Amino acid sequence: MKNYSIGDMAKKYGVTVATLRYYDESGLLPFVKRNAQGQRIFTDDDLGYLEVIDCLKRSAIPLKAIRQFMAWCVAGDDTLPKRHAFMIEQEAALEAKIKVLQANLAFLRWKKWYYAHANEAGTEQIFFKPGTTQVDPKWRKKYLAEHSEV
Image 1: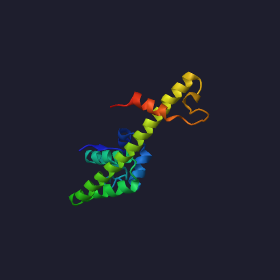
Image 2: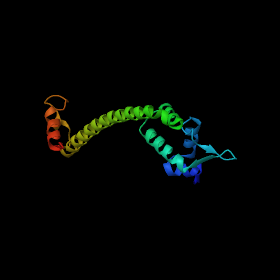
Image 3: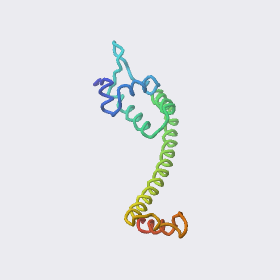
Image 4: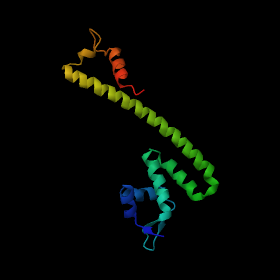
């Protein structure tokens, strides 16, 4: 089985050595062994764990939750139901975040269209209800009709 240094792992996962040390000190890497000099040594078996940690971290899951999940992983098969429930919970949370991000992206695209047309006209007053600075809802409807992905 091949051994990897902390530097190898940092490079592979696009994080700093300091980040991996922090993860270890935070209890996210309970599987990591140390050599006689006290240096962290990673093995092929650890790659799967690091991939999971990387995914969970990029999904904005708190370190405390990742720490608990990793403890369950190391504990073995008795924790499979907990790990499965955790993944179901995290999937639902990530899907909710994605929905919010998609709505935000849709709004930003509408505003991009709005400002492109306002720039073209030299004024945004073309969008306002007469005598106000309120955007007439007909323009959002027009945009949505032109950009619906049905």
